[in-house]
Image (cartoon, rainbow, N blue to C red; front, side, top):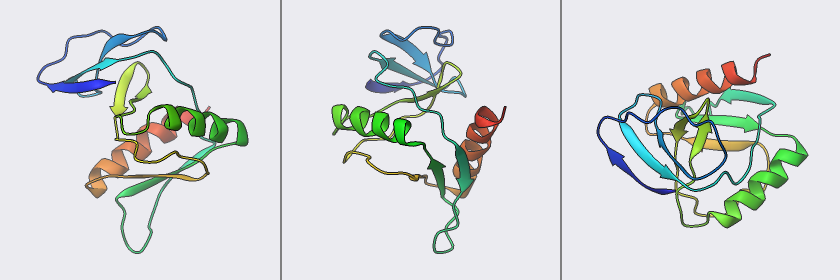
Length: 127
């Protein structure tokens, strides 16, 4: 992923796995994405309450998705990795180390942001 550009984004939702321009869900940031590195689907999503903090979301992954995430995160070391849902960038954290186990904990700056992401991911995993 190429660093984001702040400002209105007018790109359509992603529909392919190739390199593309994508917007965040609020259409306020534009991202230049490389090809899709992998696809994972959490088995469950929970808003964490670790040590009184509600700024994190835990994703439980099956073994196959854990292996995929491990491989993808190794390829993305020291780069931003865009997490895309429904053709829009949900968030794009910097990968500092390979992610090799489940559950995967995502940390956010605010409890509100964590709640929003948990709600979106929960809706996406519910049949």
